[in-house]
Image (cartoon, rainbow, N blue to C red; front, side):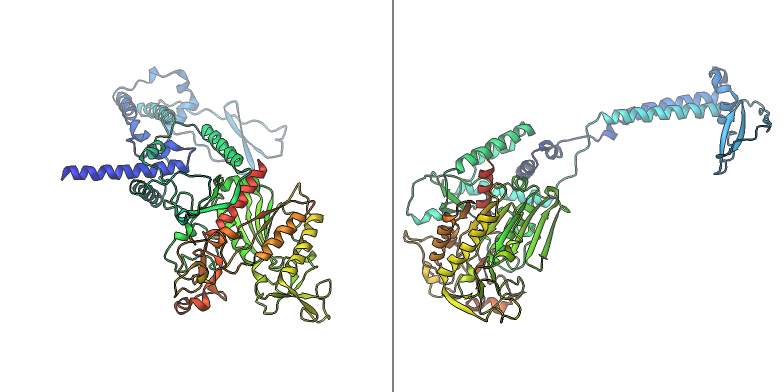
Length: 617
């Protein structure tokens, strides 16, 4: 029984050490403070007790000596002056002067002078007769000596205490330590029982199980190295981090970021990049776990490009790039989805009280997240068609007959000036009809002209899309300074309404109840309803731009595989959470357009981060 108890104690100690290793990894500048908590230590006040008792007995001995044998003759003469004798016997207590008088001492007497009023020249100085000398008693001398010894003792103990090591800092949150230890133990168990993954290669393969491959989980030897890595100085850690970042940036050049596979991160080491509960800026539309979703597997898929690796996401590094700058997402609700993701990615590195979110600025079209310490903003501007339309109201835009003014962009573009990182998108609002209603007049409608429904023409979707992007590209080429502003255009975010396209079961409804990505994609691609004509139009317009280079973030094909990552029935409808009855009717209420967070939009922002870091390098 005793051996069993000892074994359990050893396991508990190892769990605590694992938690401390995780805490030191999160706090590399103070790696020894956490481990000091589990070392036997003596408080400095206890270590000073022998010195205190020594001086206490010494003072008691002197006190007894003066009580038994008064020796006033041993004191120096200065103690026997009138002033000190009176002080020792407590007879030196002159009344406090009034607030408008100042005491002046001279030649053994006290006289009072009014403030800012000189004394009369003829006023005689009244000499005060000195009080008779009093013989000091032994108790007075003993009190003086005792006071001096107490002061000396206090000064010694205080000086000695300053030489002692400081007391350990308060313990971290025990819940976080336990969670870290639990995750670490789980990773060890997975590494012991899971088959060894095949080595990563750069060649293409048609095997479907590549999309479900586990990442390399460290074995126990790697764990031991992590636990023992406390000898590296903080400067060495910074140098290693800079070297690692430079290597990642070097690997990114010439890399096909958008060709690769989805890899399941069972241990949660690289995905998700944050937790839903850790970001207070998420809206209810995207908090799927809070809204009732039971599985979190959609959060644990990370994108692995072919032939290279994405640089590790570092929120502080991105904030340094954004210092004194503005980043703005412009577009529809999918770009707002991505904006919320970016806010959650960077806010974890900002202290509480140093970050704010202001919604519905500039007549409601602009939302601004501000990192005060960095003087940086991450903003979202509502413009679903980029040009003006009758759907530009960010709160009331559910318009059945959508009409655009494909040559009118100045009203929206006035809000894009002075932004350092612009991220545009427009797609999902083009899918309602095969033909788009376009105003025949060159400008937006004005008062008295009959409004948006007065005179319009029906234009093929792809043609209207091309004309709108031409208007947008012309503004970018003319108004953007490529030396100050970086421009990105997000490719189309797909929807998943047709389960037969990915071989869904007979009873499958849209994306409801999907928990795994698509793994049986053929070389010819999927046919889930994506309008690839618009994808080609966007690429063509971007290539035609002469002055400003726009980065095309091609997320469409890799996002088509993620039928599992939509909000589905765990979301809002008309500002309210779906009821249990509505959730049971996914054919009517499932949202297979927007995405849960944490989730797929985090990967899109990881691509942005990679481009920003690579460009800065």
